[in-house]
Image (cartoon, rainbow, N blue to C red):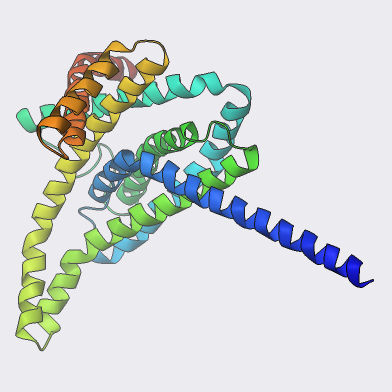
Length: 309
């Protein structure tokens, strides 16, 4: 009886150890997959605040919450099943899909660079949309559509880092990455859009002069923070898009561009320690910008054809 109980306890201990190892593996894969998608996450966080600008302070957090719920739906209901189907039945399609997303990021980044060079006037509201709830609905829907594209890229990048994992591990990792990134991005967006209100509250209601000065500084700093975020997002688009195209072309058999960037990274790293990564990122960004400039006329042509002009 006692020997049977000891054997059972040994089995339970072995199962527990195996489960713990699996949990560690999933946690490690989640961290790895999330880190690979960092560039797109930066872009997502930089793009999202513009959809909330212009509304009353009372509506800012509810709008961010609506967009965040749409983002979770995008990742877990639409993209996660599709990613798992791809991994099982068409793993060869992951690289081309990643590269298509990379082309889109290059196009968007180049558009933003051109907008800096030749600014266009923007209307305060969408054409044909009345102020108020209708505008809010249009903004939220537009943000969720933009999030779908960026989320698809995040999920594809994450999936590409899990080629040999069982299906259940892929599902858990992709779900964990999707939820963690959504919480991080839209938590940061909520903090960004409310920072000026927090600063104003501190400046007007705090009894400490130091806190009041900090509040006033926060109010003055937020326009510059939003400006910097927009530029960081633009660079992130080009960097990630160019990097995806480099890695994708290498996987498809075109090794020369990726090898050139690798040699540049090594040379820069030997010349100045810790600068190699920066050189590779700059090369990817330049490549992304060049490809994006080539895509801009095509993108405008497609937009005109869809608009019936």
